Image (cartoon, rainbow over all chains, first blue to last red; front, side, top):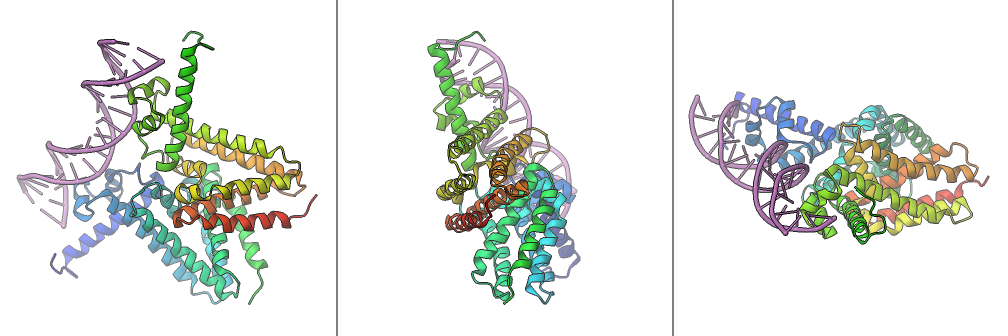
Length: 198
Length: 198
DNA sequence: GTCTATAAAAAGATAGAC
DNA sequence: GTCTATCTTTTTATAGAC
């Protein structure tokens, strides 16, 4: 492919690719990777079905795109939380962000967690590993905050916090009850407040 | 259908039905409901593909069977834990049972949790609701133990404990690391010990 | 780069002989 | 009740005109 940076064609092509990525992330979150068809994604992205293959050669490439879209959203969130001076406040901001998404979580679960669980059923070391990487991204960021807080075993605390989030999302989803997110979110906030400062 | 109770035909038929249920539970846990084909289940149950439809009219009936097989396993476990006199010991026994399944959890996640998450992507109030019921079965049993322990808000504690289990299973699975189950399991045991008695 | 039509494959479900 | 062969539908993917 020749260099098309800056040309109108490249701009619209990139825009279309981006629309497909975002549609993939949204539809895969709602329907799951297996139940989502190329046609579903194409419809939401407002791209003709046949044209999808110009941007993504296989369905798995679209699922991978959904995964990196989730990673992007996560980095956007942690990036904005990094503005806060106090690591404890950063963690509390993360929890508040989770709770604010309670209705979506109660209906479809955590976007990354449910996708990871689905992809982990495969035995080809491909997308499942990629999903693990996104989860690790979150774990690593949380671990850093605990570390800055001067906590011993920041990695263990990160497992506990992220695990609690995944667990409450799954339960809220299975019970179809957003209140689970509020209740457990409040408990996590209190827990963070109870931790000693460095 | 005429009454065949006790006849050799009924016995082998029931046995076959049971083999199919167990095979469904096992294969659906490993591959997920969507990726599992009737042929996959038939192969494991050692039943010819065409014959499966004599016992289960649709694939969804097989998934429902897998779900109730998981419910049966759960009741088997809680039933044996009920033999213990101390509710705290019952809860600790539950956690030890979870940790003892760490390798399976690290490879395929919690059988019920991952299935519930997958079924919750559907919008027909059918199997997803059924999955919620199985999760609630566990929540209710755990809540009763906390209640007998004299804890205030036993339902909140049940959400926390079951949520922690679902979360650690998902993380162990995503990271492909059974050690996550040991680490979080130990934390939960210590937490239970730290709770005041009635 | 875009889009329609269609090929190819997979999987659920059924018909009907035994 | 059992099993084979096959029908039908769905979905991924491609061919080829524009």
